[in-house]
Amino acid sequence: MSDIQTWALVFVALTFSVYIYIAWRSRVRETKGFFVAEQNVPAFANGAAVAADWMSAASFISMAGLIAFLGSDGSVYLMGWTGGFVLLALLLAPYLRKWGKFTVPEFVGDRFSESVRSVAAVVAIVVSFTYVVGQMSGGGIVFSRFLQVPQHWGVVIAAVVIFAYAVFGGMKGITWTQVAQYTVMIVAYLIPAWAVAQTMTGIAVPQVSFGQILAELDAIGREFGMDTYTQAFTARPQLDVFLVTMSLMIGTAGLPHVIIRFYTTKTVRGARFSALWALVFIALLYTTAPAVGAFTKLNMLQGVQGVSVDALPSWVANWQATGLVSLADGTDTVGTITNNADTFAAGGADMLLNNDILVLASPEIAGLPAPIVGLVAAGGLAAAMSTAAGLLLVISSSASHDLYFRYVDHHASERRRLFVSRVAMGVAVLVAIYFGINPPAFVGQVVAFAFGLAASTFFPVLILGIFWKRTNAAGAVSGMLAGLVFTASYMIYTLEVFGTQAHEHVLGISPEGIGAVGALLNLVVTVVVSTLTRPPSEHVQEMVEEIRYPARRTVPVRSAD
Image (tube, rainbow, N blue to C red; front, side, top):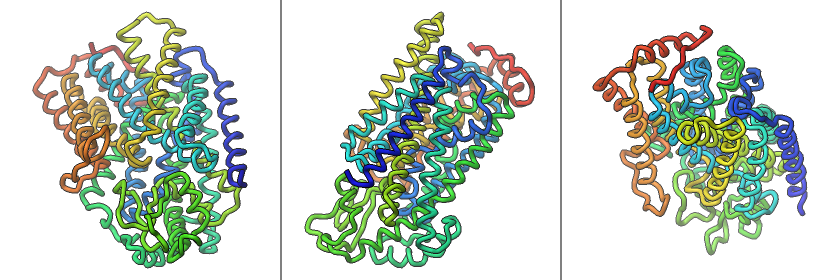
């Protein structure tokens, strides 16, 4: 076992032990603790948990790689994912917390009708499954490289640990586990970034110092036939840059597993401050990611430029073993490098890189000590597992609380409902394992698809449900279904998923950006159908009027049916 494997095993075993211990100490026996952590989580801790829940494998593992190879156009991920939290804090979090329910479908059911609740529960499951695939795949990548475990077994190991701590404590256990995971994640991300920045520029503040190397990065990138790193709209058309940013932004504000976290605070004020703390915690990583991408890309290109295959750095062979780096047949000297930021294959490249390796390989590429490499492995797993646990809870709560309890056994006891929730979580884990082993795209892209689905389904209905009293059940269900069918169909049309043939992007719109168009379609359909059909009852309209003032103490909640 190499030094890197040894340190990775040490950090992974240590952190996994902490997660399981926290979950055991936080185990619950009632649904309120399982679904919303007894609504007793302090704002500071909830902010850290929100950050960990949302900063998934895509943020930790994949985002810097996307920025590195997309260049300026990669800023869509920074603007979209952080901007979405501003929308969430201002337009949704305090109002949904005022409602005081367990799930997003439960709000939709109270606001519109039980039939809309059922549709929302199914949509929540679809979105969450799409998102969790990326997390499982990310966990498999970490295990595959650092512990020399086949990627499919890495996915299985990560899933078993996630299931163990999620099923014990539900939201309560997940919340405090995510606080620990955020700590591991941010330490593992910042320490290598500081070290590389100090080594390359003499200034250990990557957010400041990476500007010094951009001209050099542009020059060496051109030698490899790559787009200019600092030039806008080279990797994506301008329209697509706008749509991807918008899709990620409103998708963030509509993600069920993020929204549900704001139900766990003590007060509405706590929900607002949770969003503020979450933005602070997220900014620590998001302001560092562009620097990590730039530094690592420059280090990588300088290390392989004109180098014969026999003399390539050791990190190339290490990652070749995982299948995430490959050399073209007959390659003697590396002269061109292609990545999979927009394509899954590239002909004629001497070296093909998967975007998902860049952060994980960064310490190796920079020649940092083995303990730091091992720490990064633990951070990558923390990122994947923290989000996966929240997603599994959404799937579990939607299946048990919004479907089983409402339609199968309305008089189920607390014990029975908890049992069904845990069974649903187990089934979700098995499905997630399969798709984690056989993902339809790389981690960052799979996660972007989930954001697109959330943008085109939940966000318009939640906004209209809070701020337009005229919105009714017919409009809400029509809008959600229109957005879901349109967005999912376009994604399947433009990607090789489920055995379909990939087609050209219409008007240059990528599948990551189509969610914004789906959201607009949802909005239009909801407004038109609501206008042409009977308005909601006076009681529902009074209820909507009440939640617009989050500081008030009560909401006269009653099912719309």
